[in-house]
Length: 311
Image 1 (cartoon, rainbow, N blue to C red):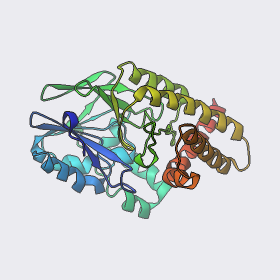
Image 2 (image 1 turned 30 degrees about the vertical axis):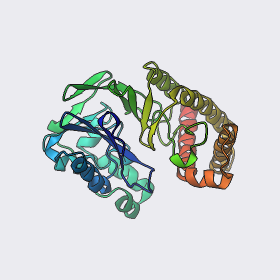
Image 3 (image 1 turned 180 degrees about the vertical axis):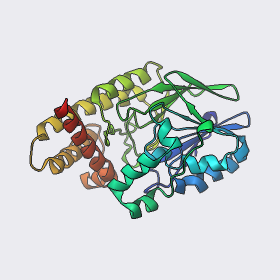
């Protein structure tokens, strides 16, 4: 948990420790969550509120960067515990928070009912009157502290990032990739893009990263996982890897074992990029830490290839 600029990092306990973060921003006795994890995350979120010296009634906002379930699956259940809060969400995601039927059906089709219950719990609708639709540039005021929502497609079309001038940092959801502390090295953090299904768009992701860097941010608060610095180096690494991932996808396209080839090639790419940065980690450890993300990135690249074919 970090207290710099009143920003608390909360481990939502989704899947494993230090994999999925939510944030509580505290300003003059008022609070705002950025992302919230799943319904199972509520005890950790509410414990952080208490540890910050607040009550649930002191929370004014729940801001979700996008409506993927590891970021926003617990929004409805959390809002039931926050009597004065409003939910801030991208225009393309708002209806899914008000009526999550399609979200639930889509995820259940992929994971099955048992896994949905285990990983996400019950997904609860948010009353429409408590939902604020945040167009590009929307400004949220937290006790006078301005948080700006900026449209950032590339990972998903219902994604925005949140600029906090007080800390000169972005809350990036998945737009600025993912970076796990197990993969940190002497040169800093290691980062990879996230192309998970179903709306990966490489050119949009490049453009969104460029837009984030226009503010010369001092730090990025990633959902996966925590604050990272050295943002110029990390942005350069993301751009290089997006291009490398697109090249891998194009090379594997049309192959009968496309998914397996994508998984193998992505794993080799990430190990090689870490090696270039001087990491001493064994390849098997890197692949263990990134296993879930490699699988999802491969699926997302396949979705992108199939979408491009239909154009």
